[in-house]
Length: 228
Image (cartoon, rainbow, N blue to C red):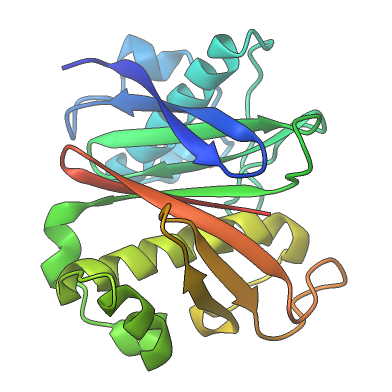
């Protein structure tokens, strides 16, 4: 098993960007040399082992992304709300499952994209997700059904896409908003999805604001991303 590797995702306006992956065996990371290299939050010692492990894995993926882009290695602190605090020169996003973490970094000088969100889900969880009514409206699912997707997968896909949308928008909103506040309105032949914000979320994110996103299936995982 490769510990670190890179894949590419396509942002339609700005070409491709790299995603850093860090793979680990669940329960094997805390207390290792990998974990020792990461600066921990002040309350880290009170966390449960799984929370420690996923935090470390995410930051290790970020470190790999920084090194791949020839950036100086910087700690990415955790805000009080749990979100990562990115430096002014770039933004990014982190996601993890119980055996893999991913991170993407987007320099602010790269095109006109200001925000990016990424999400990683295990495909085996598709049959366990029974909250379709909390994720999207019937007309959103019809867009996906028209593509011939199985019901269990399309629920997981829309859930993950909206997780990515949430992560992309959160730095400009800075408070919780609901999945139903953002609606899938279209999908093109290149698997690019378009989402529209249904109410004003902040001064920067008014009603009608548009985001785009896409997805890839990688081994046992579904990875989605959204950007604006």
